[in-house]
Image (cartoon, rainbow, N blue to C red; front, side, top):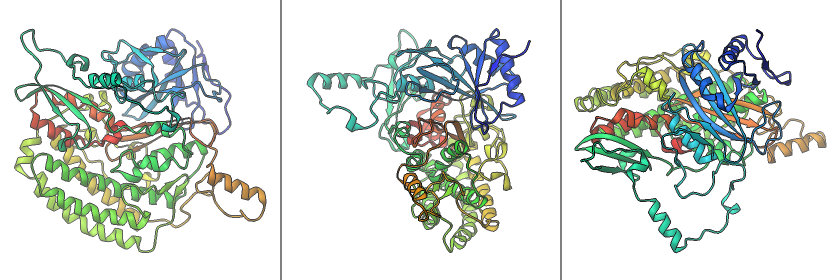
Length: 599
């Protein structure tokens, strides 16, 4: 029987459905009993299929366990408020959409499943029985959109305070404080807020060991040097042994996705810098890759290589912060001072090129903000000569230290299958023995032009996660040296009308071009309608932006999929049975940033 796959009429530039995706969707259709499955074309060429809400769980179960290929990783789960959309282009009618982004690693394949929901209080079945990592993603969607997941074991707010009114990522929720009424704290509200802070273990999903036992708790944070930021970890203990850990996140939430709905495509770039605040321009790149896919912009070679060089410099910068604080977490006081000194040298290069250090806001739609300054090559070459001997020195000081080995070997281990189940990527995944790096599997932004190795370890514990990150710094040095020695000539920004800032040639020749230039500078470019995901191998794992354009000067939806979010969620799983000092080693080896968790 022929497939009944609906493909809406689309503009010529929209990629066609690939044969392998067509076969996969036909198999999915047959599994669902012959359901008609609308297919949505997207600029990033990822197959996007709409399934009915009552068939969503079965569709996802098929894709995880029985399809060819199987999709073992739930990469992302989010939602879209469709009620203000003006351009649906043949998509099913919906007030809200739940989006599941699945990934197969070997070989790399992706598929999106979308579920259309109607009404102001929509529901969809939970998939926590399929993927443990779905628990936080579904809680986040409930918290920010008000979509209920039937059967979820603990559907409560995750990011917003328990007393928060409304769901912030709904379009009718205020985006600015000036749109909200004056704050007042009555006596009753004060009492209610205080009561909401009372710790009730049952509300957190904790259980008694027996009828005769009671809870024994230890709070770590929200203010604690071992948590690397503002987070609260509630431990249930039997003596020193950890029975359970419950992270409380949200203290660092700033509404980065909500802000994307009120900034222009260009003015949102500085906000991306602040998400993983240790990775600088690495934050800019996935957002810009998504926007450039929508706009059909081809970035020139020189701009690509400049971007790669800056990203790898920031990878080293991030890893140096992790390296020093990781050693400090397990009792070594000296390394952090040496490594921060090296990071200062590196940030000096960043500042010389970009004009800023931690948050350079230097990548642009279509390229970078400016060409490399005179003398950049000398600064980079000096660092490439200086840093390798320092890494060898740290090998003996930190990685060869007997106390650090005793504190981290065999601690917080997980295998490849468990990592994939929880959505773990990056160095933590490679520490389980899987040599998987997006820069190799699907080279983006010019990485196909570079030679480098993918470091791996095999035990998946805290020590092996450190081994991988240390070797990654050496591989980043290899990439940077290739940038230095093979930097192409040419423009640093694409010759395209939607680049930012727009090209100024001929602005003074006629009024039409002058007005167009003025509007592109003041309002920003009008990006063509569509959806796209930009994904990169970030400093901590896979990092992506999913953007939706309504052919406007601002995004309709900006979704940030951070690597720190699933990595934080796996901490309870790998901490049970260990001790409190072990937990601090696990936290240090995880290498998360809380602004990246909370966004």
